[in-house]
Length: 313
Image (cartoon, rainbow, N blue to C red):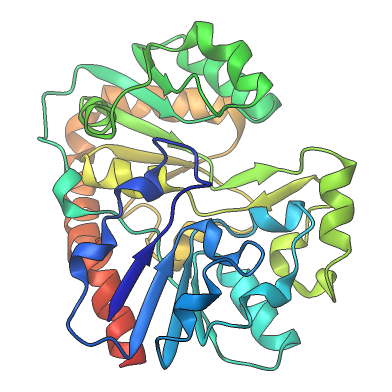
């Protein structure tokens, strides 16, 4: 299978830059896999599709694209689409009367698994700040020996305002992973807020939008689900994933609560769970080992390519 990458419109330093899927390319060229948002922008690289009998797209951004003026038909030129949003997969298969959409996990390349260092810190968060609950989370973390890792480029205004609370800025991917491995806990939100009315109206312009479970709380609560890369990053760092419970709990499509991760409900419970975990750290060593092994055995990039090959070839 031929593999094409175009990350020219991705933010530099984000996780897609480290999939390195092209190294798993095989000799056969009848099928091709594409990754990078460019491939569904204005029919970019349409010349490549003519070279292959089967064209496959890996989409690791849904459902964020629907917050903009997104045309769901732009993916129709692909024979198969692998998506990290199971709800969008079900919706598009239904309204398009097709089976070409399939759910997949957020992959991680095994070469970036860090050394499992001594745990120096209680808890970390890495990524952007996207609303009041993220601000509250940072306030909770400030009461512990915490690390907050973020970038200074390609970030929203709220994240810019919170850079003063960051302990680590613009880390390389390898350095970020190493820092996570030095923390006992990583906080994870597998959702994101609808930013404004323009986002909401773009969602509502989609055909039969209300049939997508991912949009079930877009209007009422201004929130959408999205599987985040930080979960598998923490899992492979042997760090406890402390995950916010929400309307969808999308992580349960791939991992089991209380076996691979711990839920929290709101700021007070977040503070309580952090305290419980760090006070009883030895009780959670089995969980981090179980989660690590499960990710290694199922969700690395080579497993993703093998899964797609099995389905498509």
